[in-house]
Length: 134
Image (cartoon, rainbow, N blue to C red; front, side, top):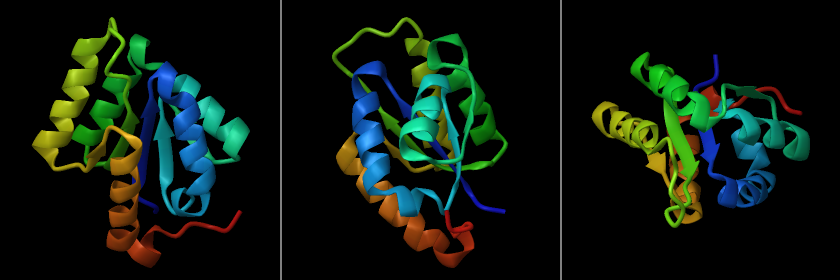
């Protein structure tokens, strides 16, 4: 079973996450991917990745991913945040970030740290994370 990597992006960062995923598609395919609703749909459609999409962040998707972290099923979170925009579900976002801290789950909140976190996860899981070639 491949380890699970969560992918989340605020609206202003979705294009950035799609571009990142296109560049790093081979590495992302080593993981079972979990994403919030719209982000997951875009990654599946535009990057041709197999993604389990939960609800959109504002309607509980961040909470659903947080539950997976609690269950020990997520090895990393790439969350491209938009810090310049108010988000009505900010308490859910903060809870997700807190869960990553409490449970030692690597968390990236911008493109630079996303590169570093993904590099580290690929090194950590090596061939165990390799999935079928697509």
